[in-house]
Image (tube, rainbow, N blue to C red; front, side, top):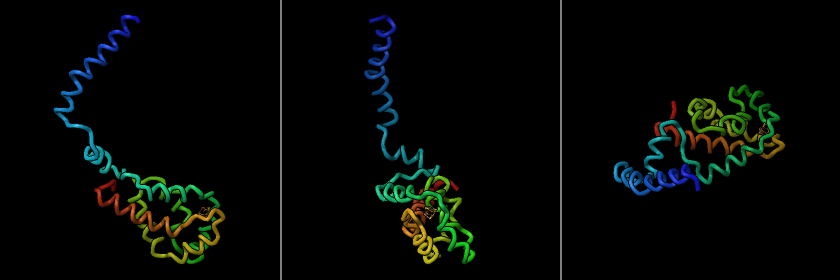
Length: 145
Ligand code: SF4
């Protein structure tokens, strides 16, 4: 064992015996509260099991844009394809998509027509409802504007 390695192990040992206990006494043990304080203000909400399931469904989208047809026919500004392709991707940017998500939530018949055309079976209505709930969670935590 070389001298450099010995000093490395000594440094790790000193940290474990002296520094780490002092840090714990001063700051307390890392916990969920500190995690939330650091990440929730940025709009990074915890990922729930339901989030994972919805994200799996969104990942089935192949970006064919067929589901946008019914929305264009009725003059709906928001495109249903944005639900799996853009809005599902990040909770941080979700508040900026609030108007489009609300527009889509209020047009379930358009989303249903898009689902019938979708070759991948993406559940647009379920995803849009989930996004509305996720948006409420982000805004409820004082997330990103
Ligand atoms: S029709 Fe389905 S696969 Fe195509 S863009 Fe829309 S959601 Fe994605």
